Image 1: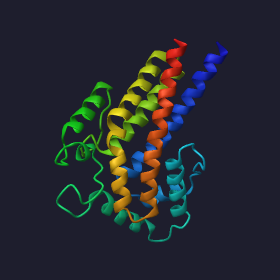
Image 2 (image 1 turned 90 degrees about the horizontal axis):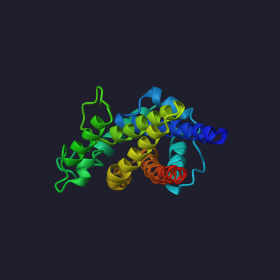
Image 3 (image 1 turned 90 degrees about the vertical axis):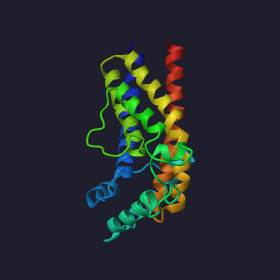
Image 4 (image 1 turned 120 degrees about the vertical axis):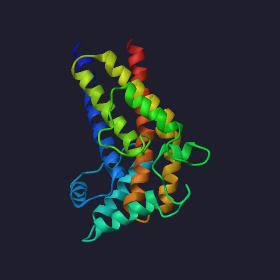
Length: 229
């Protein structure tokens, strides 16, 4: 019994750590980096060996940029955010547009089937988009879904509700497969093409690596739970 309780605590702590990473990533995609966020990032300690080469490279690039920030870094990042994610063209090939619909629809259009699917997923799980005004298939909101479900899983484990925790893990695993990893690799490729700063180059690699690593973690948790049952 004590061993099972320890395992639940360990998994709950893992979920809280995952939520922190997803929360950080969601924030960096949602809007440009302001002075407060830049200061917070400079004060963070990034891991050096995550077990995923893409994530390690991403953290290294972020660290390299942050240790050399200067007075105009906020402006530099704002310019690169616009260059990377908004662009100046009128078609779907002028930037790394952070919407799943752009990468999964034939004509690279916004507000397509992917948006409807993500919106339904949010509704099915009782999640509201708050003050969000963009399409629900924006990468920031998809990453926030992972953050919020991770916290929900941790809360379920703390309450001793293993069945609810399992359902949360199952939903996150499905969401990574059917949504995030279905289009983020293409987004990352475009980010590396359009971004000029090491910061957004690193964010691209870190995002890809985090998703690859998390897919494996969630699959392992599901397998362990099934074997225990």
